[in-house]
Image 1: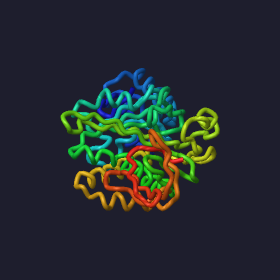
Image 2: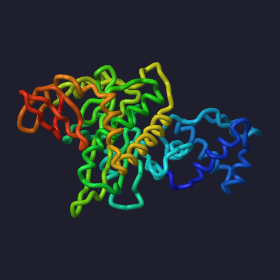
Image 3: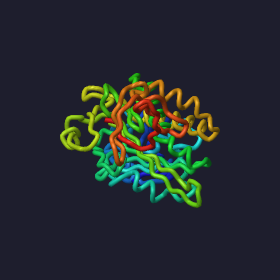
Image 4: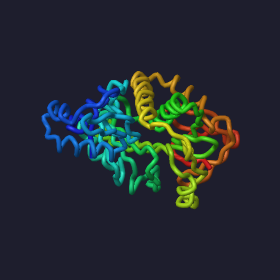
Length: 330
C-alpha cells in the first residue's frame, strides 16, 4: 500500500528526478539530498522502475527520468490535482479484495472525508445488489468517502451525480460522448463502460457517511469479462474506453473526475438540483424512451418521462405516472 500523506524516500526521489528532468542526477547528489546511502538510492530507483517509471542509469552520470508511470499512484494523482478536498488523502493498492470494503472501514473517521481508495485490480469487487464486479488490471477501480451535510433524501441523487461527473470527465479527457442509463450506469455504444455503487451509513436520521464506489473499464478486454458475466441478471454488454492499441495515462481521467464530482457535490449542498438534472437528462439514454424495468416484486413497462429531484424515475404506465426509486432497466 502507498498513500498520499507519507512523504517517503521513494516519493522524494521521484520529485527530485522530475525537477531535473532534462539532466542526470548523480547517485551521490541523491544520497546527499535525501541522507540515504548510495545503495538505498539504487534500491529505490529499482523499485520505481518496477512501478512503471522509465529511469535511465549511466555510470558516472547518475539517473534521469525518461517517462513517468501509468499506474494510479497517490503522488501522481495528487500532482496538479485541482480539487479542494476530494482526493487529498489517497490509499493505493496493487491488489485489494474491494476498494469499497476498505473505504467503509475508514469512513467513520472525519479525517477521511474526501479520501480516495484505489486499486489496480480487485479480487472481490462488487456492484449494486451485491452483484459480482469483475475488476482486472487495466480498469480504474476506486471508492470515495464523503461526510455530507444535507438531508437523507438528497443521498438518493448520488448515483446520478457520480455517473454525470464521470461522463463529463470522459467527454473532456477522452473526447468520447458516453450516455447515462438510469440509475447509475455509464455506457458507450449501448454497452456498459462504468458503474456506480453507493453505500450509506445513517444514524439518528442523519447521514454519517457515503461511500461512492466507481468501476471504470478504462482499458480492459471486454470479451474476457463478457464470458464471465453474460448469464447474470441485467447483462446488456460490456465495453472499454480504450482499445488494445490505444494509449493514454488514466491519471488525467481520475483527476478530472474528482474535479467534476466536487463541482456537482457543491451544487447539491446548495440544493441547486435543476442544473444537475438538466445535465444528466441531456446525456440520458433512458428519458423519452419506452422501457421495461424490473422491480423487486414486479415488472413494469412504460415511457420514461423524467427524473425527479430525488433521483426517482417517473414512468408513464397505462395512463398513470409512477415513480421508481430502485429497479433495473432491461
